[in-house]
Image (cartoon, rainbow, N blue to C red; front, top):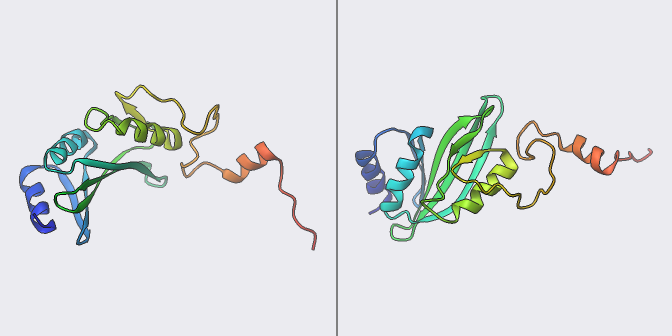
Length: 161
């Protein structure tokens, strides 16, 4: 199937997709409701999007949302599919997909550590990098990196002119 056929196939077989966008001939994205994310990802895996390449997030501070992004790949179709959903920024949680892809456990740990998202069903929240971290997650837009650096490493001195 080419991309156009794949998009039609997804539209015809899965209801609740909010947006479909072709990025280029080898990549497209879909946006779905949070409550339907497990269903669509299961459907896509059975539809030959067998590779979970990444889970990441984008903090939309003004909109009070966090966009959770799943990047899938199909070797059969030579297509990359970006699946997006939005969650509440104040209580960021979403169902884990570790039962669909084993590697999701590590990706979810990473996103939890850097964005503070709770992946329900994934109890492994051990930090990968930020051991003993006490501040807000560092990839959230309200994290003040200068304040953090000044607190941890001392104030930066300005050169005299």
